[in-house]
Length: 65
Image (cartoon, rainbow, N blue to C red; front, side, top):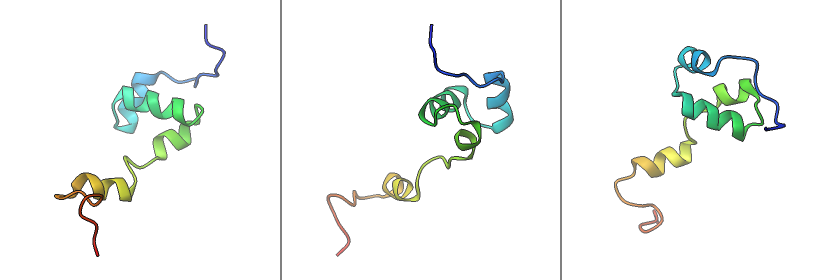
């Protein structure tokens, strides 16, 4: 049995209210030490990561000069 504190909420209900998948919310809670405000308030990904995801050519292979 785990000794980590768990949030006192029903996870599927909270996921539905926050508008994100249950697995994503569970992973964010684990990453943020079960801090609910930080888990729900985190952006989907950083602006830097979003730029890399949306880039047509890899900025690592083709750096802007």
